[in-house]
Length: 385
Ligand SMILES: Cc1cc2nc3c(=O)[nH]c(=O)nc-3n(C[C@H](O)[C@H](O)[C@H](O)COP(=O)(O)OP(=O)(O)OC[C@H]3O[C@@H](n4cnc5c(N)ncnc54)[C@H](O)[C@@H]3O)c2cc1C
Image (cartoon, rainbow, N blue to C red; front, top):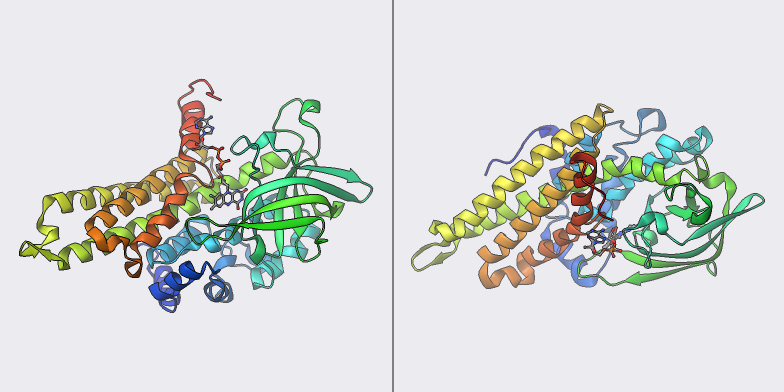
């Protein structure tokens, strides 16, 4: 198998780090439903999670292309970058739209790894993908905002110091467009009043620290508003292309991991007196999965290239995310099938990665919503919702 090997030095540095966290590490955490604290700490100390923070603030000032290689390699080595990927891109909202004072306050400690900003509260139980209808409100009172409402699937909140929060500051019936009147805040989780914010963990099919949040009069200092009040939805949208590209790269990493495992097993497993990989019924699904991972990878690099050149890349970022999520899921299915019964045995790690990669058909944006985006914005078809 000859997957893409560009960025060789970067890949080998990440692989070296990942070797310290082998399959048993991730398997053990999965069984205990524990956060990969030691892995995230090691990645932080090595500076990789500060890849996108500019040099001026102490980060490495790399592009989304390099950042995506870091996350791809983690998944390609059998790990799960979903535990920490948001630390890379959430700060983009602060970087692009925050005040100088906010950037000076938060970015250097983020770059040093002294602060974690990896929780992002957008999704709500009542409104789901229809983000602009979200019900959580932030009402200004003097020098503070008072937040009431609820979020769901807010990931990594228990392992984050700061959370980025999207809330409505002007009621939807008092704005011209439903995308207006939403604002973004930095919530310092270390300082919140426990009665004002309840965090309820949600058990999910894979090991993913995610939570329901209940806000009951949570106070946020007004200085923690990012950019202009009411413009928050646009700020969030600005960050989504990076998120899509980085997650596409994780799916590509998963895809390569699956195909490699499946081919290794297909060559070794002898049934009816020959390796199962000699059968076209076993080969072809793996060949097809590999082809699709390679194709998705090209779109991922194309989207990253446009992003890093400061060009519009909404279509490419969305297409990369869809193609990569589909390819990794196809590879996961082919791999579990290749392993027969052993695909279901925990010690092979196939079923764990199978559960982990399935998420990306739904989060952070579901496949249908990407199709709708392409239909409307690229194909000029009528908006369907
Ligand atoms: C493990 C996990 C971690 C997550 N982490 C975060 C996080 O950190 N922060 C955060 O804010 N959110 C997070 N999410 C939420 C995630 O972004 C949402 O689950 C996702 O956006 C879909 O929203 P929903 O679950 O409400 O589904 P819904 O919006 O209810 O959609 C349900 C189904 O209907 C389909 N659908 C809905 N409307 C249409 C339409 N118009 N046309 C066609 N199909 C449609 C969708 O494609 C989907 O398949 C996480 C979710 C999970 C499962």
